[in-house]
Length: 200
Ligand SMILES: Cc1cc2nc3c(=O)[nH]c(=O)nc-3n(C[C@H](O)[C@H](O)[C@H](O)COP(=O)(O)O)c2cc1C
Image 1 (cartoon, rainbow, N blue to C red):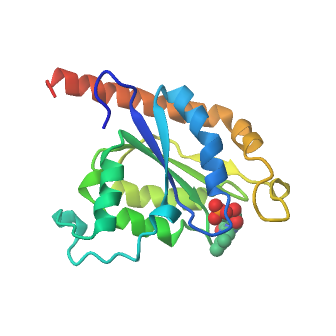
Image 2 (image 1 turned 45 degrees about the vertical axis):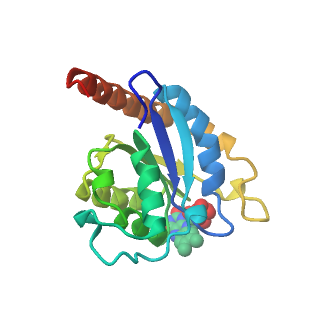
């Protein structure tokens, strides 16, 4: 967590772990817009790099007794953020199993964490975003009201199935992204004021 004199730290969680994917490109293009509109620092967490196995903790994460080094590393990444942005593709009307697995590894870390969902797909990934919202509300994240939905036209992909340029996609959703980032920034400022008032 940042101190009260620093800019808050938002971490973008890339929800896709496929070897050929576009989530990393979207995260890189999204980061500066998010940083500017929210008044925060932005870092990226890549679940592909983290490479969590399927949940292998012997006890329920809600019991707060994680043991595995990968769980401890993942927990630290989330605890060190002031807010998180879940960047999720849509797969078959839902969000990726790897992202659900990553969410399920933790519990208390998510509690009241300011957060935003950014979904993407051929039509914006709205079903993915809606399903993820239901789960994140269940585990107690403090989500800003509206998801951002990025539409990826077929012609934005090259022959290698990577985006030829993620910039225009982010630019074409600039209004929604900035509104959501401003809402997240406002939430972070009000939490910082509350902790100063509480003497934390
Ligand atoms: C398993 C799978 C299922 C998909 N299902 C949908 C879908 O339901 N709706 C949609 O708009 N796009 C769907 N797509 C297309 C993805 O939105 C697109 O491939 C996107 O690039 C995936 O994100 P990623 O490349 O970061 O993994 C699907 C892609 C995959 C791999």
